[in-house]
Image 1 (cartoon, rainbow, N blue to C red):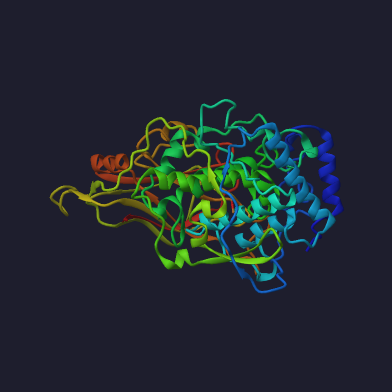
Image 2: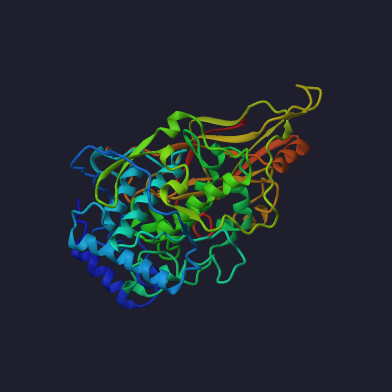
Length: 511
Ligand code: C2O
């Protein structure tokens, strides 16, 4: 295990900082590395594993925040005083790692907590996985809450709140599609800057990552399971904008098309202060979704609401917090200044819909796994014709696609768009296809670690449930067949160079 402040990393970061403002990683790294563990690419102490937290006492139960409820604002609308305060807070956090490497509240220790909770713990000591399921939203809300309180305490300003990167709000000035300037400008002298990013400050998120159609897809999910995740599946919020912003921010597609750094790898993502402004927006989506419709509801299952995790709080106490403690942001001292987004049409709530009466149908199944072709894979099956097994009558309920046993190697990212009845879609026609009723959603995962699966890292296998919109269901009814096309893309929308994704079954299910 490497020391958290390996002087070589510090030296490298200083060097990168001196090269200048906003220099993209590609300009610094002369040769194309062949492997994601290539030491010519990564700083010498780039973490492969992370140590688990080492609390000195049993956890104490969480008590709700008793201070005032203060707005979290967009990182693009902060006053200059608020920007200075934010930078001072992260400087204090980084300084803490230097002055007291053992303080569990320090910058690198907090990043390690995220690493540990995403299967990255060393020697079989990985924490419970909190990505890819219904724990994704509450765990990250709790993590951000303690992070916010620690920053506020370090600068002795209880009114400090994290800003959010509102990448969903297209068409505003300045463009929300850039990384927020307070985080991207100023080089290493800026405590919010991270040299290990894949994008330059002026790069713009493309519509397939956070465009209005993506926001709409996320907010029109009618079940927590498909929006925020289920017991063994990620929701579209995690799979679409969340994952894709990570991969885009942390992949240098020109020098290292296959490998992420910092934001592009879950094990290191929280080393980049931008992680927290990205996740603040992901957290804002939770409230946006609940505000869409009365029928959008959190799970009521006590398995979910009583799940607990432990974190170090602002006083370095080891605290146990439950999902039910974080359901209301006002109990954590914050709310979002706006839940408005920009969409081409108003997001309509569809509490009860009419869907074709298709029974649950297995579309494809392969016990030993079906390999996803990097150029895309289509599976097609006819549906019963009228008179054969009964007509496709309309019925109440919701149809979804369930993809079971998806395996993404820990050291790869996978971004895979899912289309219905559009077998000819490919990376070139993807953007246009997103605008059609055939666009169903996405599956995939952010690279979890630099190292492969091994004796102390468990394999990553999960399910995905993609809800089919009314328009997609009408399409199936009209075509009387269903085909599923999976289109993988890299961080730059190209056919991935390296992809070893497999899945076991795709079926149509009723929710
Ligand atoms: Cu814990 Cu954005 O990942």
